[in-house]
Length: 465
Image (tube, rainbow, N blue to C red; front, top):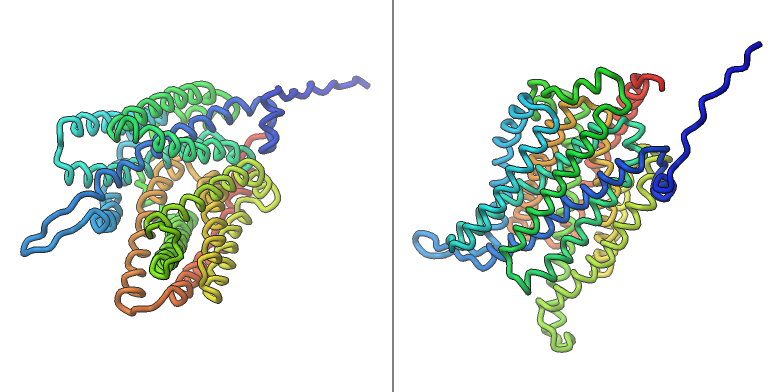
């Protein structure tokens, strides 16, 4: 009987071995995963470099109202959040229509170059002395659109590159660079703004985006003819279908559940931030009034407290993203990972409702935000792995823009009703937030079941190697 020799198994490179510390990396997968991680770093660092400019331009602004009175920058900021949600009702269909006319790489190049050109326009308008109120309002609206659309498109590209199995294993690595970009971008801004003022940050951000775009084209060229079946490879150079983002979300139960989950999670998380801010403001005021502040002002107490929270939060974010995300995906799956953050939120806000102390909400918010910015961010994007290419680009944009901002709008309305109209305190508000978390968990139950079904179908459809 003839002996059949098995083909030699591919060996892992040194880079494959190193990246395996964070996830199950198969031979030959590390290079693209690393490039995508660097790209995630660049896109979020580019945003965080200019993020402080929103407040720098708008907070000093005061707009006089007819008949007396005025709107200050802080009030304008809250109102502009509602305007952003409305704008996305227009922007998402326009994006979907354009995506139906061009292929993947042209879509990415066009959107990114559009935002890069905008940064140069804002830079020169600022140098030319554009009225502060016009600059402040327009830049805040623009950054709200830029942040959500460019980040969503980055994850659309990653979803399009990977199969369901690859995404579950490698998104942890991609997300690590993405998460670390926020840390470094914030550090760059804090160091350079005092030296060079605000406007040059726009040029630094534009430079980062140009490098990001070059790497995206490199990854596209490297991966479009590798692996997958011939039909999938041909689709890369074809425009997407005609259905728009909202049509896809409203027409498919799974996508609608993703949108509702995003909205409910944003409602709960924004409510948690209010609990922190309200409790911190009360404690800072009482500390100054009682003379136990050690000469610090309320603003200094608040700033120091938030900075300390951000420090520990960012450390935990990086640790979770690098060491835990891939393990959670491996043992719980994407569907099981959906329950990690709401379980933490339920425990944290429940403890605060019983004992509404600053120390309790501090631990709660560090835990919630660190998990949100690491595991939950990756889970939200991994939910699109078993969907169509149209859903990965168009529906993901609709969810990450409109549903996200709609959560902010509803959170603001909740605060107005509970605090302003009913005059209830933080303990009552915590009970409302717990209600949002309960809804979040119910949605996660249905979404987890749908994800398991679609994942099994997608994996069964992958041709054998």
